[in-house]
Picture 1 (cartoon, rainbow, N blue to C red):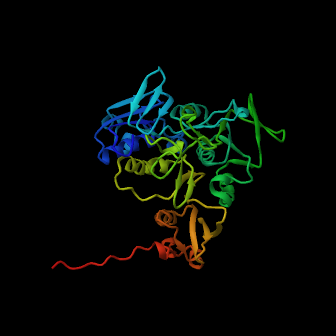
Picture 2: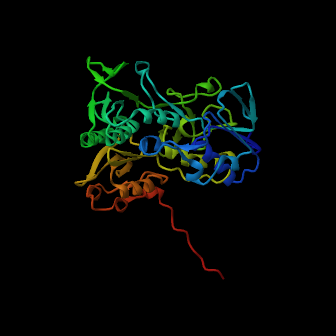
Picture 3: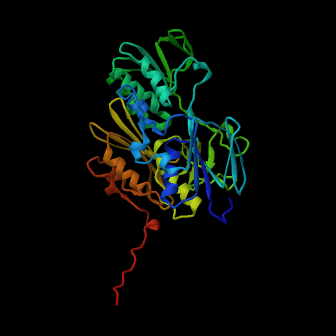
Length: 425
């Protein structure tokens, strides 16, 4: 599909949140052509966060048709569930996707929303993972009161599952190779979550490497064997993009590199990518890796706007939210190697403000990691979604009683002048 014409046939590969939101945006932004959606799972679109957060209290998936008020069957001309994409041939004027069963689907434009899959290292071949509704059902069936669970990984999924399991009477241990929980996700703020594990009745072991599973346990690098009825590998996800090589360039972690409009960097014009499978370069934040719910929810609007050449939406700040071990944790924005941490805390909550010193002498807020500070999260999401990072009054920001929104201001260069209003004559 060249820029000289708009697409009349669009194929969306992926029927999760990003795929459904892409279909919704296509219709909302005026696309009246032929729309086909393909999904590898046989289930209709469902929400993934409840799989861990409500693992033991909700047996049925949270259907996105109920959550978002939109059904793929009403949006798309053709919906193919339980079909796996195996290959892509694409150019600037169109693309063809090969499905299992040797069926080929051609379209003027293809939007890749093919998501990700849980990582299970070879050493943890006997472990369970948690990424799909089927994974959740298998794990739920084994987490009975009194059972012994070992989670490998103290990231989002590991912490969420550990909390709900321990609360249900499951004897729970979390093993983390890094020195602190949430190190990769929250940086130095991750250490602040350590005490939550003991408070929840979870045995946390950091600086510990898992080297293998065996009948009845998990082996660690120091020779220790942790008894376990269930071992959960919660060590992250990788984009489900192996089928795209060599048709598209992929990053080192296997993601499709895209710009804010979902265009593939160095790839054909007929292809876009969004959600977990895409690594997006933002003019404001730099490289933003996929893999989070909010990106799958919000980024399709910009992808469809670029595809249909409608007005692009504002670039939302990167945002991740987790409920774990009795606490709410959020990360807004993207810290850099140049940023430093300024703490904002009281007796029951805290926020790590990642601040960078700008060339104009001002301090700019780059990211916020917050625990149980919902108003700070709301203020940070608004401020960090501006065109430029906000200036922060550091002296006032460290006072937790001062609302965060009051200490943030747009940089002078980014402030839009107030338009003159002339009365009608």
